[in-house]
Amino acid sequence: MKTSIFTTILILFAVSVFASPKDDKKKEVPGATGIVEGVIYSLPETGIRVKVKATREKFVHGPFQSYAQKLLGIDNAPVTDADHWTIDGLTLETFIQPDADQVRKALGSVAQLVSLTDAGVIAGINSVTKSSESAITTQSFILKEPGDRVNFTDLSIWSFYSPADTTKRFKMVSKNPDQKAAEAAETIFNLRNSRFSLLTNANNEPLPDGKSFEIMRDELAKMEENYLALFIGKSTKQCYEFSFDYIPGEKTAKGEVFFRFSDDRGVLPKTDLSGRPIVIEVVKNDDLAAKQNSLSTSANPEAGRSGVFYRIPGMAEIRILDGSKPLATARTPIAQFGTVAPVPEELLDGSYKLEFYPTTGAIKSIVESKTETK
Image (cartoon, rainbow, N blue to C red; front, side, top):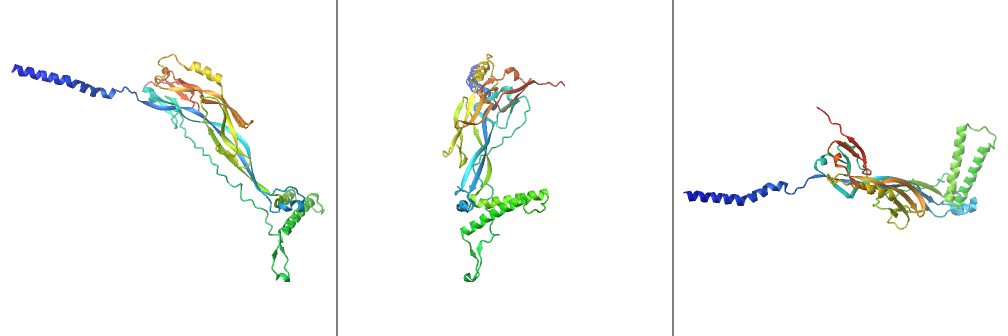
């Protein structure tokens, strides 16, 4: 009896010894990885958006251009249609996007204090920041015809038909281009004479009141201009706006083509080699960056333990050039031209509110939180 009891005790002890590692392993699984979860965020990088205003002038030659010299004494009347483009102005502005090289994770208790923008860029710690919505900028190269279709003066109110006679069986016969051009030229001279008579009061008659006189004068000038366009042509204008984005790297960039321009085709993508290149230069302030780097490294071994970092932006000079001709210049902070530094750990215990500039990632303010006593 004593032997069987002793044997049973040995069996139970052996079972407990061999089973304990397996049970311990199961108990250690939940914390075995040692991973501390956190909130993933990005630091911003600065982009440059160039907005271009351009005017397209479309010229249509006159139907009677071949008669301009003979009937009106106008030399070199244009014989072909043409498009002519001009750049009226450029404006520069900055925008932000998450920096793919600066994706980080806030760890531990500070993770619940992080505020982000809609793009996932860090905006604040332990503070309520204003929500922002990203606006999509659409770039279109679809061109509209400038204004309505170019129309010339309707000459149907004039007698462009030869008088009927018995040989033509009383049918109206259309005049040839020579006759039509001659009548148009005669109309121009008649309008000029009428305007001259009005301005000089050649008939010695009482003139209308001031407003009526201006209307008559302007209408006569407008009619003359419309008929003159039959010989020298006319043009219409259409204004367009384009925008181009450029993301600088971490170093000075020169000679970067970001769009092209042609006098007869206008603003073109940089891939269209039919236009001349318009380049951008973004020159980094290296002296400022060097001083920032020398002070950004912390001697504290705990620095960056919570995974919260901010940017100290650098400065840049931006130049837009058409060959050697400057079109626009500006100076602005560029996030990626600066350096990255850890936020001091003593500011991340919930006792302080931190707000960041979303455009550069720099610290905007540090305010001590007010604790409410109950």
